[in-house]
Length: 602
Image (cartoon, rainbow, N blue to C red):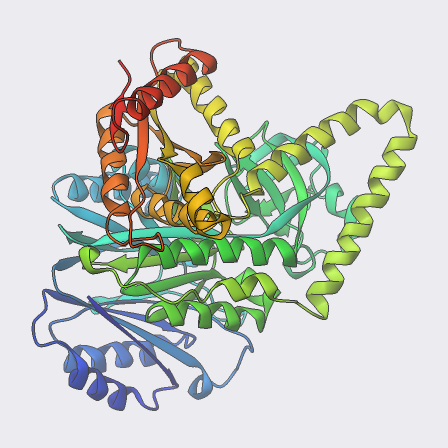
């Protein structure tokens, strides 16, 4: 595939852009998808824009959404539009448009749309991914996402919501078939060869104590937290009373909730007369939440990890979906992030009112999140690209972001000191320390390989064992050990040994799925966990890892590195120690029957 990204303002330059594309468009292709991300929120102008594109490219599929960028500009002729044109060699794009009529009950309509789309997907062979564009009027699409996640599994799903920064404007989504004021647009990518990697980055840190949602009005309105009116949380900890309450005053301090191992942010968008809080994304009674703040250092670390995932994937095109709240928060720093991705592959950017992303079994609604979607048809010829994202680790944010980080750190430390003085809050302090420990473990990575460290991998393994017992879910593990690693260190030195570890980490990232867990177990041992997966597939992954290591020599003498691997699938009522013992035994057998092989435990 080839991807082209163009920017223009108003309608100036659109004809020249289309002419330039025609000059550079490959002669042979299977399909063309044009995505239009425009800050112009005028139905007539956008309809004319789409008409011009369709007239020049009648064979193309066209979808788009209203979006916004800083600075917010009133004059539409100065507002930015970005075209992302994807030319696929072996992929067909199928568009689905679902518009809700005013008389239709919303949740029933969502479930119906989910069933309809799921039916189309189930009838489609070689479905490679789904992109969703949703209007602001129907952004709360939990029933739709639940049906889709249940019916369509193991397919990347990504997307976002339309947004207009000017309050009087009502954003919409659109295609060549027309404008959708309330509804959902879907682009289905169908291909034997297209691979899609979806990686996300947030960087918001927990602040203060853990609280419990004790009463809900509906899925998006929290009535009480710790048995007190929900709005009191922002009054007590941020000093935002009823008169001062506005989404801009509290959006930088969203609630954090952990759901099935994934950390989700929930900014409040409103306060009711009954002191309940409304949110753009769903919450549930009984969930544990904490206030949070945007930590510049965490933003850097997570953006670096996401960039390295994308780079290791070797994309031919990249689509960045950045939450408008995050965009407003990081400001000019986002331009630097975008430039890193553009050095990897042609990159387009869409700012959205929240994001949609498959995470494990679920398709979640995210906020203040940065999602990178990498596309590649020519998997067998991925180019080795220059390491460009490491510079992120040295980025030093100044001014507003630096101040926020230090002030929030001061507040956190001061709070802990005050709580330590009160004997009656000892139990609360213990719970707070445990919550901090869990959240820190989730964010921690092995510094050399940028994979999960042992603590994090072990936590996921414990959780998978628990799910196996309580929910009868299966999973498989691959325990890998680099062959002759001590000899490599002794012969070539530890610098080469480090390069060998990094190379294996890159291969692991490229061979596992987005919801799998890959980490460094210790020394030259690595552990991969594959949820909802049987041993046979895990063994195939192990063989792919072995094969990938032979694609390029790593050692100074031109030699390749090899690994031995043990594979095991969890058995009924099996405990953590017993499962790991079988996994380790399979690895032992692989090491002592010739190395460079994969052995599956009986």
